[in-house]
Image 1 (tube, rainbow, N blue to C red):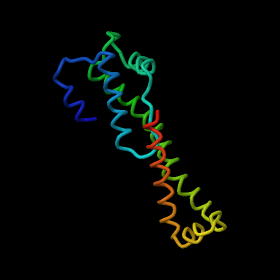
Image 2: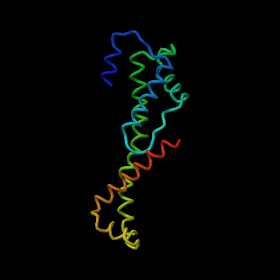
Image 3: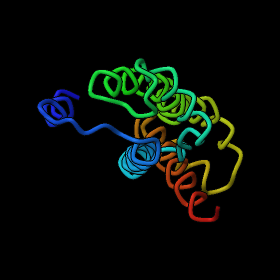
Image 4: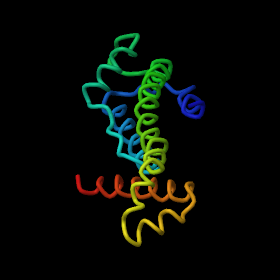
Length: 142
């Protein structure tokens, strides 16, 4: 964030709603391309507009540097919660469920014997990887 602020300082450029919304979409696109797990939807135009109005202290319809910093703090706080919840489900719950269901494979011919020979850490990692791949393949269907 300091780099963004540094680029903003010394310039009189303000961000319009259109510029701000495009920036939010680019940030969410980057998050979705870099993080494993489910696709995270960006806030709607109405949500960004509401956040912008909350942060537009001088009521000129644009965000200056100080207002932009306030907007980013609000956006990143909200985004952190959403992204964290998705990652917790994918990276914490999935391995736990995998280990709890490992015993249920014992009765399946051939598969049960192979699964039981795998160390728990390997089995949990494989199941988690399969879930992440399944979630990412489902994103292309939308």
